[in-house]
Image (cartoon, rainbow, N blue to C red; front, side, top):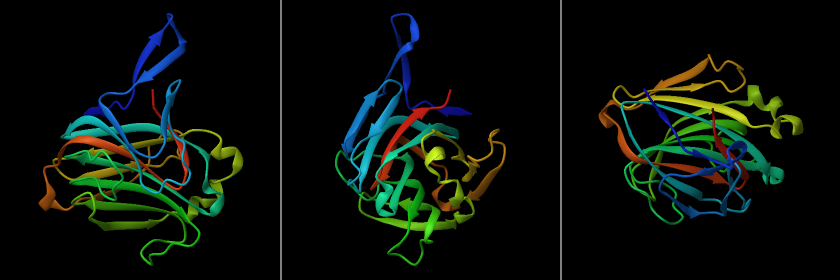
Length: 216
């Protein structure tokens, strides 16, 4: 199994206290991105199609292991973020989709425009065909966890672990409320898309400021 390494740690002055991350080949395609310490920040709460493309060859069994911290921007009752996986291309500009890929999305919206998106906290899986065309594959109501969206909890990084088998299409999204990350929700992608292979991943945000870091 290959672990996705978003961020390569480069130690400075011989001490981890001065660690500064250096991304692999990447393109901050839209939004306002920056790097500080061991985190990557998306700083524009108004950006609806914020995207950071990161070159990571993907095939077979992949583990996406990272944490996300809320910075600000959801005061208007809306915000979301996600990860395009197994993307074949990287478009250097704002876009809805990301070439041929799958988007795993976590969403909070008090007034969703689509009836397919539950009000409140939810998760979606989208199949991307082009930079402008995506289909909703699955939508999941996650309001059982909405009570966890407190000020104290949002101030701390939330760990995410996503395992994907590009050969079989099985995806496991581990429960971030489980401190051992041992329980998960699983589903299977369309068999006609298999095997999945890609050269890029893309961090995405919508209407929210967030920061990301690699889980150690």
